[in-house]
Length: 184
Image 1: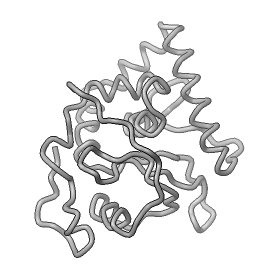
Image 2: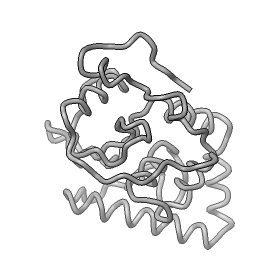
Image 3: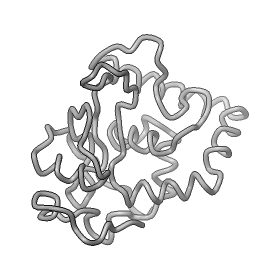
Image 4: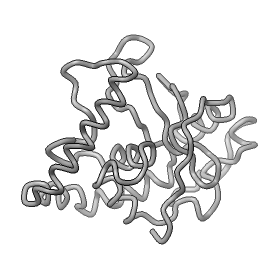
């Protein structure tokens, strides 16, 4: 990626944000607490979720990537073996492993500030392996650069997913589905 997306402030979700989420994922949000990051197009691309869903089910994924264009591009990286390569590097690079463990601790601290899920892992395979690049990118976008080294590294590998415009139309998100999903 030539230019990473700019940091944005965490905000309370609006009705338009909820409608965009529904359009992005094809379902209503569960446990939505906030918009953790906005795509340069203005739409949500990472949401913050509650550690427990409304029915009480634990949901340890605090930062959930919602943009289908970003998710598609990340899926391509996963299919190309990036997670395996990163996990192998964790075993041979003590400095990277320490930074990734710190990212794990940051993730847990942010989740625990909402509600403690004792005995539940952080997310994405942290701290010992890489299991989900989507989670690592969500964490990097929400927390900012320098917090999750492998999330930052994954972001650098992605194309500018927002360059073609929003993944959902602001009008369509509020009034109904659009005809083009706009995947990368």
